Length: 152
Image (cartoon, rainbow, N blue to C red; front, side):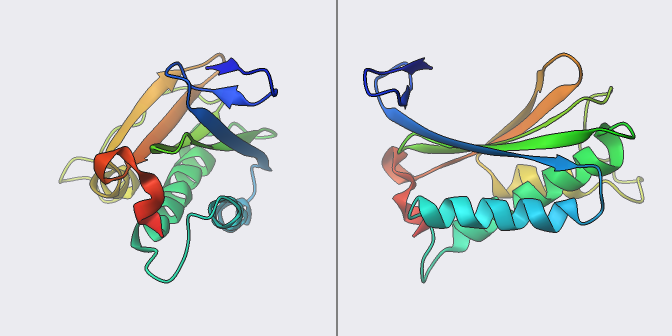
């Protein structure tokens, strides 16, 4: 991504990208706050509306990724970052934390850990990226023909 002449983020193929992020402390009430943040961003970007089925999926994925960061990824005294990006074709959710380990989808015998299973089912892609310290867990939502306005 680069910055264009107007100071806006631009994807490699020239599309303007919107980005918003918010940092959350390691507290139980941070997960509902992350959901509210995602809902506000989607609303600001015009990606909610009467038939907003996929915007609900986005908010649920933010909730699951934030919960995973809170429970498994954020060391005491630290927090996590939620970042949303939208380039007109793909909506990307990222949750950055400074904890060790690599998230994985739970095995059938595991009693918990269904959050990533939901993220995998609801999003079009998901994965884990490196950062120091910690990791970035992300998911993406693509629209038909590359147009995310289907969220509305």
